[in-house]
Amino acid sequence: MSQDTRGTAGVPPVVTVFEHYGAGADEVGRAVADALGVPFHAQAFTSEQLEGGDASATEQGAVLAQVYGVLGGAYGGLEGRDVATTQRQKYDLVIANNLAVWELADRGGVIVGRNGAVVLAERPRTLHVLLTGDVEDRVDRAARTAGVPASARRLVSGSRTGCAPRCRSRCTGGTRASQTGTTW
Image (cartoon, rainbow, N blue to C red; front, side, top):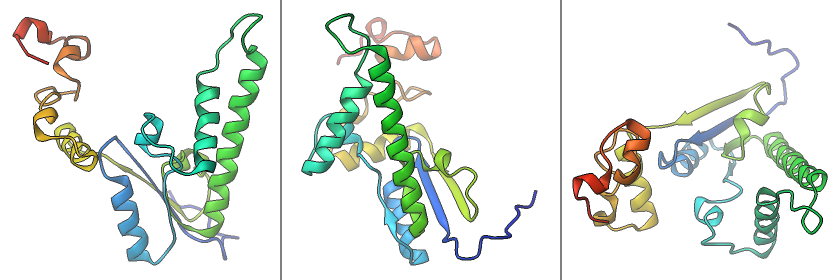
């Protein structure tokens, strides 16, 4: 299937990179940007920030607080936020993200995360790359990057799905950790 490239002169090339957790999108994205000599656009929020461990920059922390507020928002009756307000806030976040991604795309380069593959799905001169790998390799990589000791990494090893042994029965029909004598 060929793509119509008429009218794409002056449209800078873009590579979107997204990953299954631990596959190294940031590192690979930076290397691709360096090799191509194009700008690198990191994820809007790191996994650590989303997990609540870091909100370093004031502006970024404020946006992250807004994301938490909206994603945590639910109908709370007369004393809570109403459904319409929560839906509007979610809509506003999606629109803001889409605009940010399109602004980055206008500059060209490598965009990591940010739902770039979805937002830019129909954009010409755009390549979408999903990074994946063996679950154990991804877990090991993510743990090393986060500074998790090797002894803690074994909690997810041995599972085909990457789940810890305590949830293996739910995911794969296997034996529960409590039945195997696994100590947490």
